[in-house]
Length: 120
Image 1 (cartoon, rainbow, N blue to C red):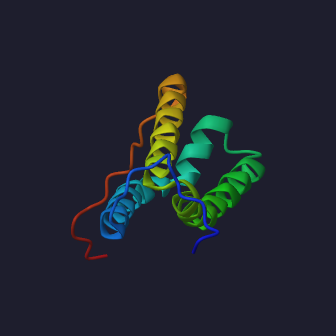
Image 2: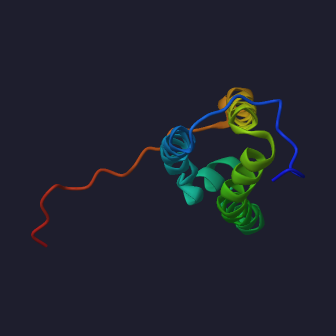
């Protein structure tokens, strides 16, 4: 214990506060990761030749789901909760900026109407 350095960059928070905020932030954001990939790439890149782009998207999505919790908990253990929240807000800002910058390329989903009851 005497060889450990005290973190002077963060305020002391309870672990419960961090875990509740962590669960709420990821629980609120992760469902938005699951966009309709086929619709997204067929409208943005053309239906032909989208396999590579969709594969990169899927790989980066899986990578983010694996790395994000480990990264956030490592940052928390080294620098405290304030740096984790700063990282999440920077990420939110960057994603929102990209969303605004590329909004003109997004096309709304128009699903085909289906009958409510089908007695075929």
